[in-house]
Every structure is written in C-alpha cells, then in structure tokens.
Image (tube, rainbow, N blue to C red):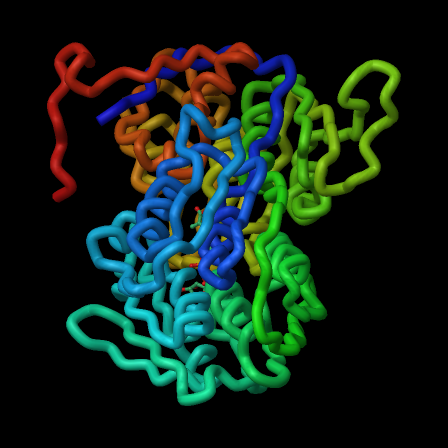
Length: 452
Ligand code: EPU
C-alpha cells in the first residue's frame, strides 16, 4: 500500500486545471447501458472507481472500445455488444458502491437486472431503499435473495409514475440517477418529487436528453420525464469536478497560497464560495491566458484564490445541493483547525462522516465531537504525524493538513485518495508542495497496522 510523505509548510503557487467529475462520470458511464449506440465521454478522469466501473460494464456486455494507451487522454468510448449477462456481482460491487447505478438502466433497457446489494462504508450505512422504492413505483418487481437485488420489469415494460424520492436525510443523488435513467424508457410520464438537484444529476439529464430522452426540471427538486421508445448514442463532455475544485481552493487557503484554477465549476460551488469568503479566502475570476477575457461559462471558469493571513472561524452545515456539500466537509475542517477561534461543523447527510477527526487530533488539532457536530477550536499550528486515511474525502483532508503542518506527515492508505483524485501528489507538487509517494514497505521502521 502507498503512503504520502508530506513535508509541510510550502506555500502553493501557480496554476492547475480541474478534471472531469468522478461523480458525474460514474452514472454517465452506466447510462451507456440504456442505448444500443456508441457512447463517447470526454474529460473522464483516470481513477480507480472508473476503472472498476469499466470492468463491471464489460461483464455486462458494454465494452470499452479503445483502451489506454491507444485511447486519447480523457476520452472513453463505450458500446453495448452483448446483453446476455445482467448480473453486477458482489466481487465488483464491493469495490465500488456506485455500481448501483447500473440497476435502473439495466431494468429499463433489458427488463431484468441483478445487482449485488452494496454494503455500508466508512462514511455510514448508505441504504438503497429509495432507489428500490422509485424503481418499484415504475412497476419493477424487486426481490432480494442471497445479497443480490433483482429487478424485473412487468410485461410491456416500466410505466411512468409519480414518485416521492425524499428520505430522512433529504434527496438521494444516485437514487435520482437510477430512477430518472429508468424513467426515460418507461411508458408515459414520470414525475420525481424531491429529486436531487446536484450538478451531476443535471449533467446526466442533459446527456440523456441529447440521446433523445425528454427530461424537464433538472437542477430543481421536480423532474418530469416523458418516456421514449429508445435512446441513441452520444458524444458528451463530463462537467468539471466541483469537489476536486473545492479541495484545491482549500489547499490554497491552508498554505496561504496564491493559485489560479482553470476549468473551475463556480456555478456548482456557490455555497462553498460563500463560506470561504466568510473565512477570508478570496476567489476572483481571471482570464485563462493573457488577452482572453474571463470565461463566461460559470461551470468552466478560471479563478485566482488568495487568502487573508488570518482564517476566520465559521459555522457550516452540510446539506443536499445547493447547500454546502458533505464531500467538502472534511477538507474544510482541515482548514478550520487553523482558524482564529471556534468553528462549528454539522454533518446532515452522513452523520458519522467524521473518521478524519481522530486523525486531525493526532496532528494537534482541537476537535470536540457531539453526535453529528464537531466544534473546531482553532490552533496556531498543526504538527506532522503519521495518520491513516479511512475514506476518499478524509484522505484529502489529511493531505491538506499535512501541507500546512510543521514537519513531516505520513498519510497511510492513499489508495482511498486515488479513488477520487487523479495524480494528486503530482498536481500539488507542480504548485510547490513536497509530497512523495512511497510504498509502505520502503518506509523506515514501518509496521503495518490492523483495522482492529
Ligand atoms: N439514503 C437513504 N436511502 C437511499 C439512498 C440514500 O436513506 O436509498 C440516504 C443516505 O444514507 C444519505 C443521504 O440519503 O444519508 C444521501 O445519500 P445519497 O444517496 O445522495 O448518496 P449517494 O448517491 O450514494 C453520492 C456521491 C457521494 C456523496 C453523496 C451525497 C457518487 C458516486 N457518490 O452518493 O460521494 O457524498 O452523493 O452528496 O456520486 C464521494 O465522492 O466522496 C462521495 C461519497
């Protein structure tokens, strides 16, 4: 397993570009199952989660047409060539929860799907009851046997319905993706109330519409979908990753840096920008090259990030979009550990998503957790320490803390980070960070810990 060895205290400076969004790309690739035509996706990040998705799609008969190194960077071509296997096996699903987004497309297009029930993970229980309730409302017969969810469409195919998709923690992102994708091929009109409004859902709806679907209301809690007979192939560019962008904004802030970020989806980050402004982190639009005016596309802006010498504390509560995203909570907390006063961080999406708290404390942060709230009492400095990554965004949080800490930080198990950030160390090093990726067994005096 790899570890990042980070020499803290380097101020980030320079320019970086945000990659295509992982959380948009995952349901977009699954949507290739909805059509007999070829699907080309552009600006697809090179990430472990996506590689697992290609492996799953290949098992389901949806093949990757060109593999690296022949494939152009970021370009993914998929084409369904065989529909005999519709079983997403546990062996793959356990490596990637987003495998669940094959369920809706498979049952809609093939009339049958068997997808292993995803388990919980480090950030919480993560049930899929709303996905199943939505598909059942479209007429699918859902059964659970031996850990597999089986969905069968009724004679004549799925039927449009009015569905309330909200749960105790608000809307569901992948649940909306599943039900919306399935409804594109259902007979009649589907209304999804309390749909997720995340930009990744808007991207999926836009791609499906370009394939011939009739979806209205994307970006709002009410989706109206008029079913069509079939969807065609498509060539689509994935939206930039707002979570990666938020992570770089915070990396600049925690190092008191000054960086320019290209391809930054500002329109998907309004709650984050608002909170960062209150903390004294300034984000201004700039032109991507001399003589070119700042980009007009608010999803692909170029921005300069600078920061006041003193970071101000804030109160933040995670919420479904357009609220503050849970996927940036951990990275924000890393920065708040160095704020001048007490901050309050409340997690409303995944109330147990605080695995980073104990690790930040090992670096000298002062954190007090009460249920789904953490009080962050700002300290003057963090001190480098060995810490353990537990999930994707917790890893990013620890990398940010390591960038700012005095001395050396070892972030173990960065395979979690690799699931969602492409070549993170190279990109941060290009901005002046000092991060080395080391195989654990090459670390002096390394002892492998157990999960306990
Ligand atoms: N929920 C239910 N029932 C369901 C589905 C969800 O109760 O059937 C609950 C969840 O337990 C949670 C809330 O609803 O409390 C929201 O979960 P959601 O379904 O929206 O999460 P998801 O779709 O499984 C996606 C992202 C996550 C991100 C969440 C919330 C992908 C691949 N994953 O997960 O991203 O945190 O939405 O925005 O899109 C990450 O990238 O690090 C990550 C975990």
